Image 1 (cartoon, one colour):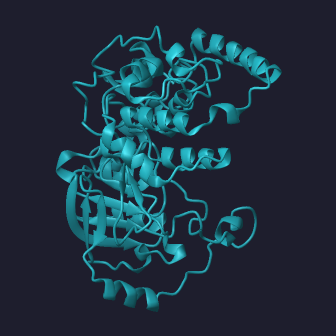
Image 2 (tube, rainbow, N blue to C red):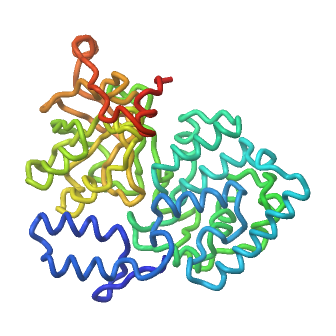
Image 3 (cartoon, rainbow, N blue to C red):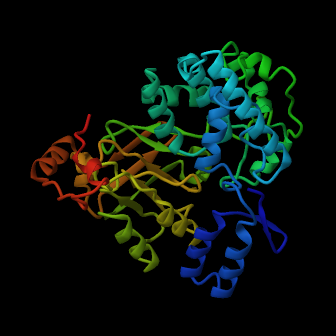
Length: 398
C-alpha cells in the first residue's frame, strides 16, 4: 500500500491503533483520531511498513519462492500487474518442467530468508511462519538458528514501524535484490529460486539506489539483526523480541510484573492508566492452546506506545504480536501458560529482568519457588470447547 499523508507527515495503518492510545491518554481528540483514520490507508494493498504481511512477502522472495522485486512493488502500480502476469507464466513453466517447491525449499534457502529478515528488522511472526514452512518442507530449523544468524547479520533497513522508511522507499532503493546484493557475502548464492536460476544470477544486476534506506554493511542501523531469541526461567523453551523496535534504554530492564490472564483484561487496565513507568505487563493464556489460536497482541502494545510508555514499560506474553508492534515487547513465550509454562505462575509484583544483549528473560524467583508454584498450579478450562478453534486447545504440547 502507498503511504498515507497527514499534516505533511507520512502515516500508515499502525498510526491508527497508536492513535487510540494517544486518545485514551488525552493526547488526541476524537476529531483528530477520525482525521488520522481517514488518511492512514489511502488505497489497496497490505500495510505500508515492514509489518507481518510485507515481512513475509520479503522473506518469500529471499527464500526463492517469488519473482525478484515482487515483495516491494506497490499494489496499485503497473509494475505489480506485470509481475502478476509473469508469475502466472512462471508457475506454468515450473509445472511443465516438474520443478516442485521441495527443490527450492532447502536449508540454504531458509538461511538466506532469515538473514534478509534480520537485515530488514521484520516482524517477530517470521519465526512462526518460517518455522512452519520449514517443517512442512522437512527441513530442520531449530530456534537457535534464528539467533545465530541474527547475531552475525546486521540490521540495514530502518523500516516503519521502528524507523522512517516505507515499503515504497525500499522498492525505489532497489528492493529485496539490492538488499541481498549488499548481504551477498553472507548468503548462499547457489540456492535455486523460482526463476530456475540461482540467487547469484537473480541479483547480478541489482544495486542499492539509496544508501539511507538500504545501509551498507559498514554502516548498519544496528550491528546485529532485528530479531532476538531470549531464554530464561520464564521462557525455558524460548521467546522472541524485535530488537530493531526497542529503544536502547530498554534493552536491559527490570521491573515489577503486572499480570493478566487475557488480552482483554490487560487492555482495560492499560486504558484505566493502572500501568506505571517501569512495570512489566504480563499477558498469558494467549498462546496456541490458551488463546486458543495465538491471537496477536497489537492493541495492548499500540496502546502502551500511544500513551508514551514504550520507553518505560515492557510487555511479555505467550501470545504473538502484530508486525506493527514496537517497544520492548517479548512474545511467543514457551511453554505457554496453558501448557504449565512458568509464565503461568507469575504473580503481581514479581520482579522480571529482561536482558536483550545477553538474550535472557527471567523472574527473580528461586528454582524452588518456581517448582512450588507449579506444583500448586491448576490448569484453566479452555475458553472455547466446540468448533474449529477448540482444536487448538485439544492439541497436545510437543
